[in-house]
Amino acid sequence: MAKWRWLTAGESHGPGLMGLVEGVPSGVSLTRDMINSDLARRQQGYGRGGRMAIERDQVEIYGGVRHGYTLGSPVALLVKNRDFANWSDTMSVDPAPTDRVVTRPRPGHADLVGGIKYGHRDLRNVLERASARETTMRVALGAVARSFLKELGITVVGHVVSIGSVEVTPQNWTEADFAEAEFSPVRVIDKRAEEAMMERIDEAKEAGDTLGGSFEIVAFGLPVGLGSYVQWDRRLEADLGRALLSIPAMKAVEVGTGFQQANQSGSAVHDAIWWDRDAGFSRRSNRAGGLEGGITTGMPLTVRVGMKPLSTLMSPLGSFDIESKEPFLAQVERSDVTAVPAAVTIGEAMVLHVLAGAILDKFGGDSIQEIKDRVAQWGSEVRRF
Ligand code: EPS
Image (cartoon, rainbow, N blue to C red; front, top):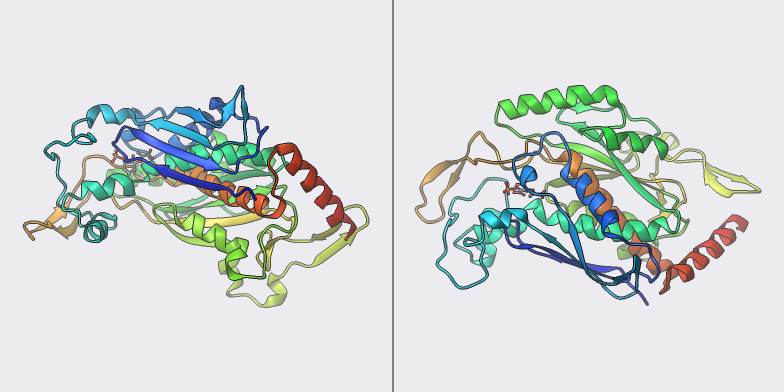
């Protein structure tokens, strides 16, 4: 049976990033523009640094698409790194003496543990792949999932909830509200928070510091019944947690009002069940975030993700050189102040991948029409339950 399987490859300052996804049904509309539009969203955001002025991420499609539609064969993508022009000797694949060797591990990065684990004495061999540059390809492949799910009426959107200590007052946003975030430099729906967030980013930049934050991803239009309670590795929350925590710098994932629920009594937390003849079963509230027993309820799926401040600081933190064993103060020339607005797009991509997989697990199918028919048939069964 078709499975959603995908991989990425490539280094931050190497020639480019490659990605491959299998399980994409035939007949899904897919163009370079669709993918480039998500790539552009990922590059935006107030608080990004010098690298984003260099890159203009554009995808090249190497397989799986013909005349604007997927073929059912693996979809293969390439995004070139423009910055490679400045690193072509250092990052050359050909045998050559190593230059720009990194022996000073930066606190909070993969540098030290990655070097120990893989036996690299040049920590560049670690940081090049551990870099969040890799998320470019996750987003490009996520755009393929987005187009597939859109055919089934499923949309995945996101917005920033907080940057540093500046937080948006949470509300029950509708799908249409999320369009507002597209016009915001900090990707917020609630414009009242926008200015305070940008001021906070300016202050952090001035102080040579970085900022974390949190964001919310919501999926609308999901059928009831994705995921399962019958085995630990089939609960959809678990897949979402794994996928979202795999994004560099993510430290926490909350489903629905998860953390708040820990302090409340059951009567204040659980969502009452409702039934009417036309729509069948639904919930009157959605504190569960669209999941009960590891299965989608048909309500919007809602997850919130906590991102730590970026580890690359302009102001120094203590570390030790791995060769001389001398202490030094870690300093860099270039970093983002915050990447929370960009992380929303990456979070959307990861949720899209999980949901594309969950759809194939439940419905299978090789062409988009076959899957559409199965989802529609299931929908009428659910309404009759
Ligand atoms: C990153 C460091 C910065 C970021 C980069 C992630 O890059 P550089 O080391 O080239 O200055 O800009 O993010 C991207 C390149 C991107 O496309 O998002 C890091 O260390 O993770």
